[in-house]
Length: 133
Image (cartoon, rainbow, N blue to C red; front, side, top):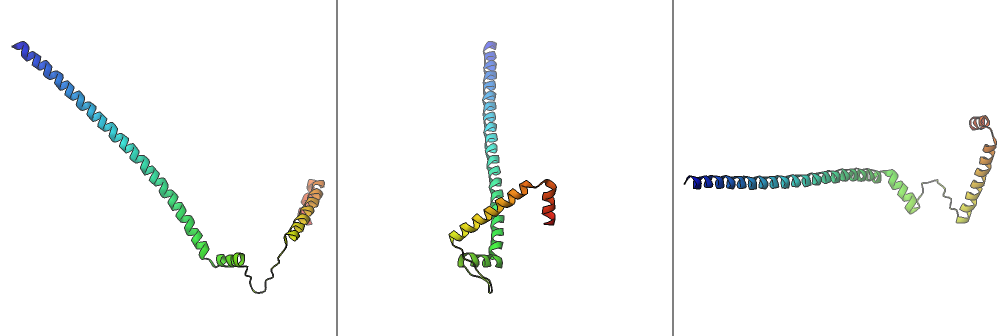
């Protein structure tokens, strides 16, 4: 009889150890799952913070653009550029593409001549020319 009760004690001890082990594994699994969920939540919070920063920057840029659009200078510039309007007393010069090409060529040639002249001068002569001529 003593051996049977001893077997029950051993069996009870094994069952208790098994139940404690299963409970420990279950708790560990739940902790790992909760940690994983928190980690995912942190990444979503970081992403939301980044989106907030981007939205605030975009909002600031749009506010600045709105201030510019509401200014009288913007309206004047748009009237000049899009509608071709001018102030009273102003003269508008309209150049054909050929005239523009001629003007650009003459400016390039003048720049080349000036650049060649400057390259021929020594350093002190360049300074003298810069300040006194």
